[in-house]
Structures are given as C-alpha cells and as structure tokens.
Image (cartoon, chains in turn orange, green, purple, yellow):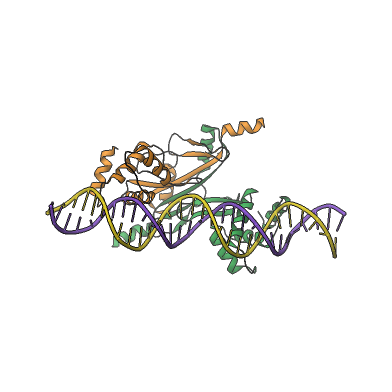
Length: 146
Length: 146
DNA sequence: AATTTACTGCAAACAAGTTGCAATTGCAAA
DNA sequence: TTTGCAATTGCAACTTGTTTGCAGTAAATT
C-alpha cells in the first residue's frame, strides 16, 4: 500500500487533501506501530515543515480518516486510544506490567478465532483489538536478583 | 468461588471490610458481566440499602480490590474500563458496531494463544483483554431490507 | 477568478478518573 | 469495652483525553 494510493482515496471522498492531512497521514504511514493523537501531534509539530497544527485538528483529521476507512483505531490497555493506517497486516504486542516494554509478536494470532466467532454468531466484518500483558523475561530475572 | 471467600481475602489483607466494599463486591459478584465504575455506582446507589456512596469511593475501592487481586479490569473498546471479580472463568463478547449489542461467546478462545506467546517471548503471568467487533446477523439482514 | 464547502485555530465545554484534605470509622490490642 | 491508629470516606478541585461552537481560511470545482 503506497502513500499515493491513500491520497487517491482521500481525493475520491468528499475530503480535501490539506497540509494537515498530509502531515498526519505521512506520520502514520512511516510509523509502523500505532500512535496516540498526542504522539502524532508531537511528531508533526517537531518533524514536519508545517509551522503548526492544532491538536484539535489532529483529532478531527483522524476522525475523518477513520470514517473513510483510511485510518483505524485500537485500544491500548495502558496508553489508551491509538491510531494506525487501516488494513495493513498487523501483529500484536505484549505489554510488561513491570517495566512497561511492549514486545511485538511476529504475526496476528487471532484470525482463526475470528472465523470461529463468525461461524458461531453470524457476525461479519469482524475486527479486534487485543491487549496482552504480563511480566517480561527481563523483569522476571531481575526479581530473582533482588 | 463464594462471596464469603472474597471477604476472607480482604480480611487477610490490610484492607477493611467496610460497607462500601461490601456493596461494591456484592454488586460485582452477582453481576456476571463486567461493569464500569459508573455502572457500579448507579447500581449501588439505587439497589443497595446503603444510603450513599461517593463515585470517588467506588474508584478507590476498585483500585484497592484490584491491588489485592480480588477484582480485575478489562478494556471495552466502546465502553472503556470495566471491572469484574478476578479469576472467574471468563469468555468474550463480540460488539456490533451498528446496533451496539454485545454477544457473549461460550468460552475464552485465547488461552492457547497465551501459551504461544509465553513460549515465544519468555513472558509469564499473561493476561489479556480482547475486543471483537463487527456487524451482527440482525443488522446484516436489516441492511438488505433497506 | 468566483463560489462552494471543507477545514482550521482558538476557547470553552465535557467526561473519566485522580488527588488533597479534613473528618470518620473499622478493627485490634489493651 | 474502650482506646488509638491506620484505613476509609466525602467533598471539592484538578488532570488528561477528547469534543464542540464559532468565525475566519483555504481547497477544489466552475
């Protein structure tokens, strides 16, 4: 999926391809993990040539892009609502409740489960957000030291 | 797991078995689904003989009970943070983004996945919160009508 | 270039959850 | 059973994340 193809989809909608949208979209595109609105705001504010972009505008942009399916939202159990480019193959992270690290898994492990759910419930177009958390290997070993 | 055994665990901790804790605990115990702090507050306010209990107290009670492992928290992608008695066998719900219904699955489908994650990452004591959402059978069929 | 309509920043409102503090109350030891 | 202390409570104020109203600005379409 190219950045250009995303611009295309915006032009095809009733939305306008403004500097703000370009900055947010580019930020998300080059970031492979998901980001909070605040994180996007921070990155755009410092790294972009754009002089300034209100946090409110970031929220409204993300909402608009979500509505046309270019962006999707996931809930992180600790960091709250996060945003990412929609439809990219995704994996999941495991969060350490001791040190706070997020460890990425190689692949999404839930697709087979979604198929089960569709079969059992008649739901369609299933999506999911998952949070795994526990104690990471490092924290476990340093517990033994102490 | 009896309500009495939960009282026991509170007495064994440094916590006190106050009217507030009793009301919150009883509310969660008899409710098999998870509840938001506000929902617990509402139920306790109307259904309990307790004259009043501040919402802040509900939050603090839930925090304390979570700390000793009697209560656990899950994130609902739409309804936010929810609380439930910890350690009960749990299942998951699927949320319809059209009509808002939550359909309960018969069992938790993620235990095998947690084992995979532990093997791959060295994490221990894994827990998870999951949100599945899509369009329920009813909403799909009414779309065809319209 | 003119027109239309989306977009923007700003200030203010809002909701969920947290904190400080003084008053209260379990509960355990005397 | 009374006493003392730490846990608990209610209240008000605060923080953080997010939304809304509004008036001015700027894309896209003609």
